[in-house]
Length: 161
Image (cartoon, rainbow, N blue to C red; front, side, top):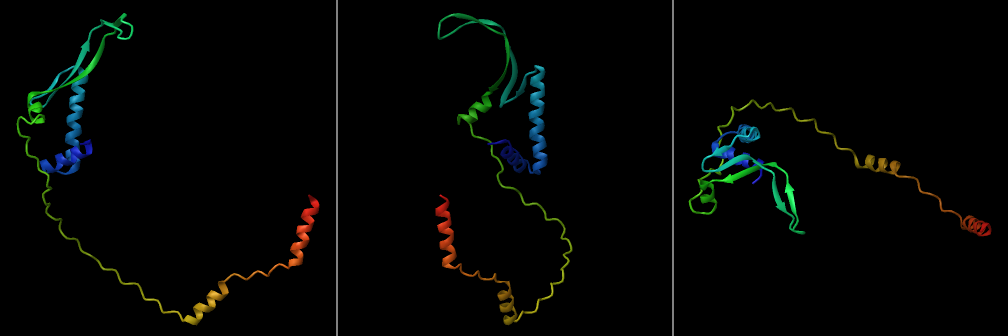
């Protein structure tokens, strides 16, 4: 499920419009991120725990050579699934019911519909006038080139070579 799909599902489940659901989902994510960035632990009971963990410097081993190396201190993000989430994911307990059908919204009051006048009908054009216009628009036929002129140009081209 992508973020857009999550927002749509929250909107249907909570019976609110998509914009409101988007604000709720994005607001929740922003609050979690801001608190974790400060170094606080965010614990949503029955779901997950979000934390920023500082790992101290330590000695490690290069697996390729077996040589001992020093690993620098670093900060990592850690997300831990809690028991309620694990139980539902593994099928130990039943998942909560989610509304998947959007409820019908009361229709807005009807607006006045103004009918526009139909455009005037065009008079049919006589078939003879159409044929004359087509004949005038047709391109003029080219005159065939005399065979003698073609032979002369071919002979001249051959002499040049």
